[in-house]
Image (cartoon, rainbow, N blue to C red; front, side, top):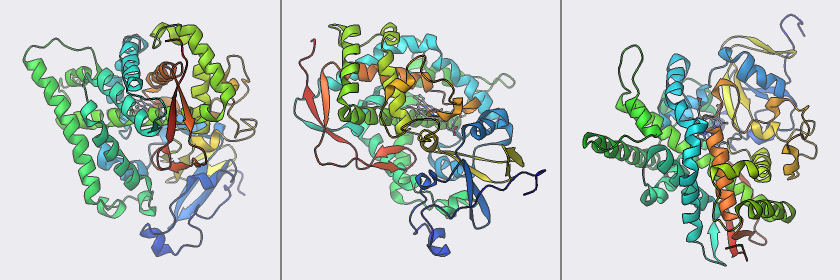
Length: 460
Ligand code: HEM
């Protein structure tokens, strides 16, 4: 070890690809890259892929340096561009530098507390409309149902649009995109032409075309409405349409607008849907916790069907349940960065050009941060519970300046959907059906999540 330069992190074999011939790995034929396999490998380790170093950083202090303290040295990685750009374009999630700053400033006001307060009623309407279609004894795919409701919520609250007719098409498009882009090929780690890093088939092109058509339609309807002198709406779509560059006075190009809308639309519904889906699964497995949620919601709501914004602070247990569910199953279970220049993480050297993988899933299951990490125990998040855990040991929404813009929106939506369903319905697991994770771009349950709907002898 050279003390001045820092220690080398331990080297491991490429996760889940050990033993596969190089050519098979290159073509993406080898078993797919499995970030979960790095979980037990310590606070930091690296592997090499054709000379490129890929680091797995699983320590809250090192992660803090990457996401916050030395954030300028750690832009988003090339895998973001290779995997997500083909359909998200240069929206907020991928943008960098001054352009990112400007776009974030433009979108941020739509997520202020003052705005969120106004949206609670619409969120509750969407949730009660969903459960009004439910029938006692029926088996539904909870993943699909939650996707539909969160999509409905994002479309209505942020874009003032009714996309209920497009729900299935978007869900199918997302499945195709998740399927194609979630399988990280070794080529995704390199700056190569798009056709090498991500050969795209017809299904992919059709999925992108579906999303483009929906978003373009939404924009042209709104523009037509504005031209007809329709009253200006106080929503995100309006803000983005009206946004002007401070220096040039220019609005966004149609392409930029499309990229932001597709990004917000996709980032804004699938993740919350996954958080809700795992929550219902966990509640079905833990009747004690389910009973506590129901008691809290019954007491706060009484005869009412759904909570208001002001009710939310009186539902602390429901919030703790959401936090604990996202600890065990963080929907964005992995994200990545690039080390632009050399750096030190604690005693370890981080070389310039390295690719860095951060996994909230792995951090959330470290036993020194989370005693009995596999247990579902919402009390961990009780106000006043253990506070000596480093802040970045819990990262469902990322951290630092690139933290999720929809963080508070998502927490509020989760609480409203849960509190609208819990008093009237119990979602029961299907006996004998094993529930497994499907790590793609997000952490969906494999093959969806069928559950049986049981109507409760509720207050209504
Ligand atoms: C439970 C729900 C959600 C989870 C778990 C989640 C997770 C995340 C994470 C981990 C990041 C950071 C990625 C990185 O640092 O590389 C992120 C960024 C982002 N999220 Fe979310 N998200 C959720 C809900 C939402 C919602 C509701 C919206 C919008 C309506 C949204 C929009 C975005 C955007 C635009 C970014 C990029 C922000 C930037 O770089 O400035 N997300 N999200």
